[in-house]
Every structure is written in structure tokens, then in C-alpha cells.
Length: 108
Image (cartoon, rainbow, N blue to C red):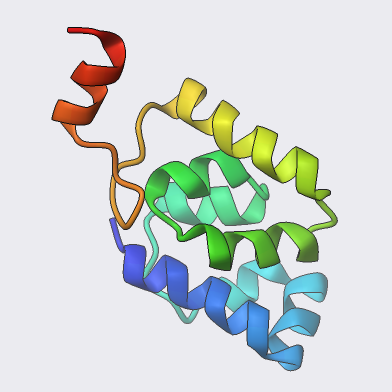
């Protein structure tokens, strides 16, 4: 997984108007300059907020991407929760869910 590259794409999209225009016109071509896994690339192209969250994207960066994709705030929050239900615990980054945490939550 390339969380740094994934986060970098989203950071650039949050700050660079030319990148936003390219994303709107040809999203796949914007991603060519980044070393992403197939899973990361698909999550971006499909605007899969839940998977991006589970992959470890910081929520402060991810919320701007959601807005760029036309996703309302309430839906953004719901999609992150659904992502954990669908894909499992957050795998990396600030929000990574450790085994110890998961066991405590599950009551194991």
C-alpha cells in the first residue's frame, strides 16, 4: 500500500485548481503520475470514501475530496462508517485500528 502517494493525490486535488480541472475531465490521467495500488486507484476513481478511509487517508484530507465529488457531509460520515463495516478496520495511518483495540471493542 502507498498511503503517502494516495494522500499526496488528495492533497494536490485539495490545493491545485489545474489538478481539479484535470480530475473533472480525465481522472485516470491525473493518477498516472502517482505510484498507487490497483485498489487505491479504483477507490479514487469510484469515489469510494469508505475504502479510502479504511486505507488510512486522513479525514481532514478526505473530507475535501468528498466535497469535490459532490458528497454531502452527512453522507461522507455515513460512508466512512460503512467502509469499516464493508472492508474491515482502518489499515494504516492516524486512524489505524489495532488488534488490541478491535478485541476490546468486540469484547474479546
